[in-house]
Length: 140
Ligand SMILES: Nc1ncnc2c1ncn2[C@@H]1O[C@H](COP(=O)(O)OP(=O)(O)OP(=O)(O)O)[C@@H](O)[C@H]1O
Ligand SMILES: [Mg+2]
Image 1: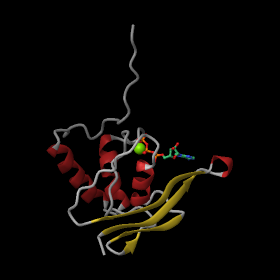
Image 2: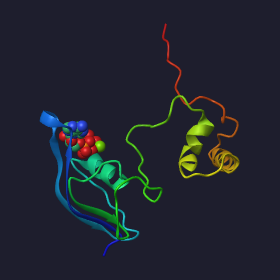
Image 3: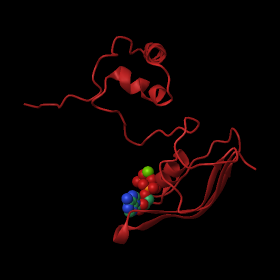
């Protein structure tokens, strides 16, 4: 069995008259270390499949498995980088970066230490307390 196994997956999005079959009978296996690109026109379901792999969407039919374990929700073992930036505008730089560690139950002192180290690595030391929202540009 391949580490990542997408097995006859169909997935509906939306409700009622808006219900839409976004994925129809998709099967795909990915080997360990294999690099796979999903190519297709806009709206063909690429993000829907990635959302199902991330555990944000539940397949209507079929199964998604990682290392033999069925995917039924998000997990730190599966990362998803969104098409658009996804920051919490009401949280500081530090709290945005520390959010994943907080969700994993890492104690505050430890997650702040790890976050400081990460920000330092990318040249953002000193910006911990800054907001993450962009100021509205004003043109005159
Ligand atoms: N909530 C929803 N209800 C009904 N249909 C939806 C809903 N969300 C998305 N869709 C439709 O599902 C289809 C698949 O969308 P998806 O975002 O997965 O496409 P994509 O291949 O990632 O496109 P893009 O290249 O533009 O990112 C699209 O046709 C979209 O209009
Ligand atoms: Mg997309």
